[in-house]
Length: 333
Image (cartoon, rainbow, N blue to C red; front, side, top):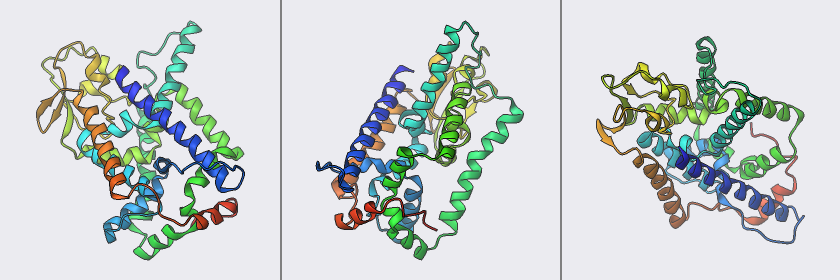
């Protein structure tokens, strides 16, 4: 679906721009540049652990995070999107999914140039005896963070983490992670990129705990893709195009947590109304899903901006002090 790629690509381009602006801000903070660049709050979207801690603090105290409020806002928006519009955040916004998808498309183009026949499954055909163990990995990672943060951390621990130097400059630590990666990091990233060339959306399907959480919420939501078994001609075009290799022709109500709401199955189905988007058993026009996804996302953004819950509220001299000793600040225990 070209519209989806355009929307996801636009968000990816924006994230690259935000990363560059944050790098300029970082240089100014460590006195390597005399040009002041405002800190782009959107960079906090890449701090899901901090957002999860902030989310629990919000539930316990009702207080909105002042260190990384944009990260919490994006997290809350993603949760609501998942409940109402499947894993629409993954399918229409997430830049990681876009890059992973582009890597897979590049691999197909290279195979075509080399004259090699492409798999009819489009790079998603992983043997079931490997597929199911791999699928469990992201849920195990999610279980670890859920236990460590939502279950084990008490309010005192949450407040201590929030005020820790590591959390305050977690965005700068993330930047340093990519600017000066270790050999292990390079190896891991290289392996993930290579795997993405052979298995479509490898990270998203098997390793992303964020996607696992959104999938579980989507599973409980009212929006589903339904298949009319009486109309289905069993061509399997829907399965061959599905980015997450869902066995669509074997179900009538696609409530699986793996569905990212990309709508590609509906688009390629040759039988009109065989596959449809449904909200509480009422059929919706498929394009309403991305509209809902973007509407929720920008409502949260606008609300946070107007309420003063988008930009962080910490003294500049304190942040600069922590930035100056970035390398010495280790992970919070």
